[in-house]
Image (cartoon, rainbow, N blue to C red; front, side, top):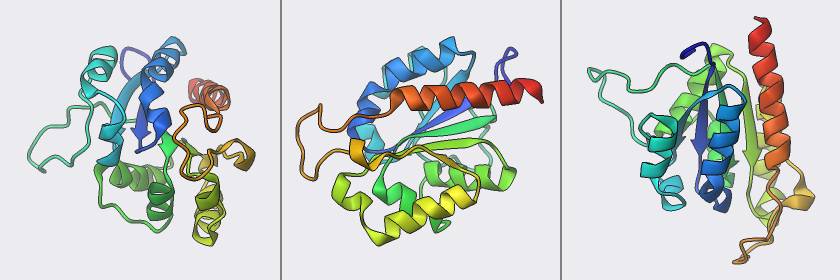
Length: 184
């Protein structure tokens, strides 16, 4: 908690919806969250970190720190993976921690933190058997996965409007998590 608000880590992966994070962060802040953004290396290609750092008041992290360096982010109370790529979803379900984002997600599972993930592969990748198994595993582990296969973008789509990212569903779930944290 920071100033009485729970801390939400937004884990951003490399997908078109990451370019819309500023609006989502503003909405989360209005819902009473202190927001910190952590990104995968590919996620950095989809947004400018400086405005997000200014908006959140915290640096946008993408690399592990050295053990002797102090933490620059407050501890998380919850996490949202927005968007969760095919690669991140599969690696996370396999317990791989080769990026800061994955390391934090794997630790969050071990800590029992509430996590909501919004996978956003293209429609063909979503039908890959490994992906379906990874989503099932994450759900079994208690991760709230928001996934509607009919809303995903088509393969090789270059149109920004391809697919409909479920921002409203994500915000509703974060509201549920916030209310649950308030009752604790």
